[in-house]
Length: 231
Image (cartoon, rainbow, N blue to C red):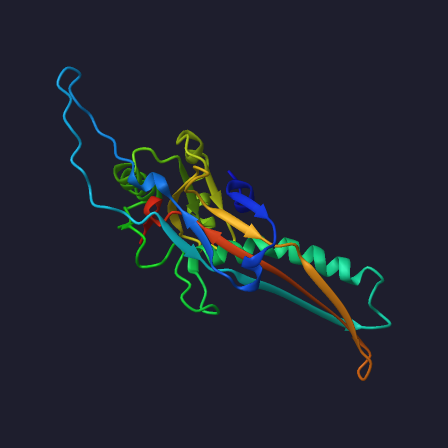
């Protein structure tokens, strides 16, 4: 098990996307198909329907703010706020991945989006995980799965997860009973884009308060065709 940001691909950079421009993404292995055949008399593939290779993801801003009396605030007040912001990013990004957001129009790349394939829960968390993985492999036999679990799900299954030989991650932004699977393949797995943190300090002289405002832009991408979630 690893922390969320240690389990997915994180790219720290800036560019046009930090000005609100959509970030284009492409998944060419959506066209891949596989099957079994007789050695001597191979059966030709039955072509499946055409798929869309590309879509867009939208950036959002993660904001932080702190205020303290000017005489009481330490010299490193801005650095303290910067550290707090870095620690808060994983929660905000994992919440964005699971629930999406309504602060940006047309934001639809998140795990609880109605377009994401789902399975009904089993009688236990173990049964639920088995059903999610079964569906994931049935849809994409070439998947390299990563389990996403809420804290309750991970605690209940405990060391049993070690016997599964499938990597998993938990995150504070997920609901406690969360169970989902995404791909780990760099071409279709979860990628988190993060801009450098920007911190601005100012003083309100009328009330003698020091303010620190910090911000960081984030964007998430993943192939929604390589995801299964338990409902």
